[in-house]
Image 1 (cartoon, rainbow, N blue to C red):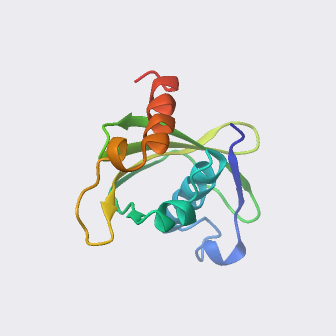
Image 2 (image 1 turned 60 degrees about the horizontal axis):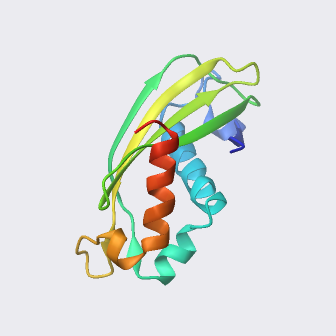
Image 3 (image 1 turned 90 degrees about the horizontal axis):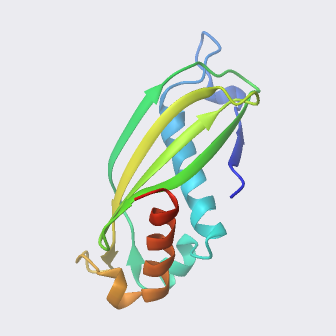
Amino acid sequence: MEPYRHTVCYYETDRMGITHHSNYIRWMEEARVDYLAKLGWGYEKLEAAGIVSPVTSVTCRYRHSTTFPDDVFITVSVEEFRGVRLKLSYRMADRDGKCVCEAGSEHCFLDRAGRPVRLDRVLPDFFRVLTEQAGAAGN
């Protein structure tokens, strides 16, 4: 799957001209939304089915700085999927392929009342897609 591309905006940099660390978390969300849409399961489709997927954990390892107007290419993959919980990994690289950030996010699936949802029962097609993606990542 084609990586998500983000161009560093001027306002995302600090006084030293380096991308502020908090922006990488936002880029993870942009890339995650794009990834799910490319799988055919955009957030609007999940929400129309009554499913929300809050973030329960985030990790980031900053490897190299980025600056305005660098392009950052973000590859998303399913690290682990257990039906109710989803763990994604992100590799952010510059135009030359050098890793600038390695990150991860964990999510759960809830109904509108905030109760955990078993995707295999509620959205079996989405469950199958995530299971296949986890298998493709070697899990």
